Length: 282
Ligand SMILES: [Fe+2]
Image (cartoon, rainbow, N blue to C red; front, side):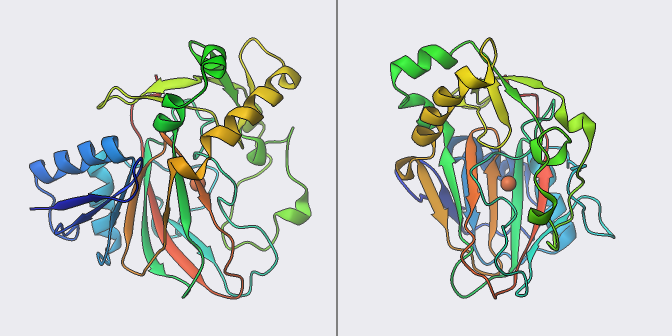
């Protein structure tokens, strides 16, 4: 029987006594899906999954999703190598700001799975913040702004209009597709969504991609969004994972934000990532 223990008071759980390299039974799949909905981030140590095993695990949660803006492995379009080489010094890191992945898509990823292969002795932790708890603890004055309102998401780093300067995006091991006019399109999602299994409400606003709240200009939205982001990324609402090789972490991309710490220059770090889709956020 799997054993689940919470990582913090609000977000994250570690699951022991469950091998993901074996065929996952129907009851095992239901346990994993419910645990993810309830805890938002699941950690399983010592798994050392192969690519086929990681892809089978991904399908437990939903259809595998290919991401058009990040180049996958040459021989497998479902898997991205999240890699920073020891020689990549003084630059940014993939995911090094608070965000949810690709929320500017009509149907953003429902979740992702990281499978740790090579990890620095120290550093390279990942942090997740619960947006269900952030919504629950949101001051009423801010709740009244976001309740029932849409927010506008734009794929800024991948488009033309807001493209980052060229010198900030050279020589990274992760190859991204940039300059796509489609990514500049405004996509509207509810600012507050409901997690379909638990019914919990969650903030769905993205520090990288949300440009404004519907019915407000960018200038009017900015101070409101900044106040919300200060709130919704509080350490109180977060868990931090210190990686070891063999770890598997699964997260809900709709009800969390995440942040990749960039404190391991000079060390190689490699994880394989898969992504799954679900129903559009509502
Ligand atoms: Fe990310």
